Image (cartoon, rainbow, N blue to C red):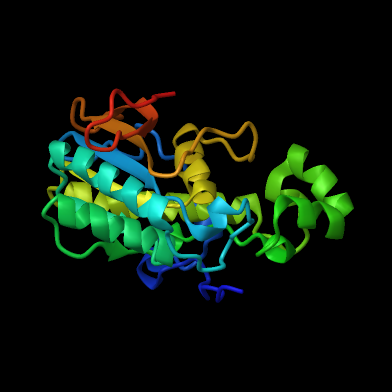
Length: 256
């Protein structure tokens, strides 16, 4: 059994920025208005961690702190080599082992210092499904598992609610916006499949789990912010979703 990563999912600085109430973040959308005061254009590269030992066994990980396996380490190196080409200025990451190790590999490849770790980027708490495989969860929790495909984690008693996930995603974007406002042009963010769903959803103001978006291990999604006239909403777009960087010597990667 892997140890549980203990975290509230909130950083003290993020809470102070939201007025100490996580619910305040739930009211926001990460849209052009959100970025209207940026002094310059910025791009954000959202990266899921490499394959972990839990991913390899189709285990619901949640806050269980699984490390990367050999495949995941290779995926992280490939992502780092590709991201080095965009010359990132800053990197933030979840402090959980699988994300932190991925971020450290990317940071080294890009010539950056240590990543800034944000607890707001940790994975969704999947409650009683933690450490269970698809098969064992279906056997132990048949009613919740049956509803899971229609309501995702909101169907599982004890799992983190979608409203908290949305709020944490907004808090994470607020920190990344601060880095952009301070001069960073290309910012890398390494997180988890569940939280990345909400980093993307927050840009649309969508507050439900479904439909899910593709988030492969070390899949890279790019969010661009283009500044317009002072005081007017920025132009924002996702020009790339779930790009998978090829290993050295491989051909073109898949983009969805």
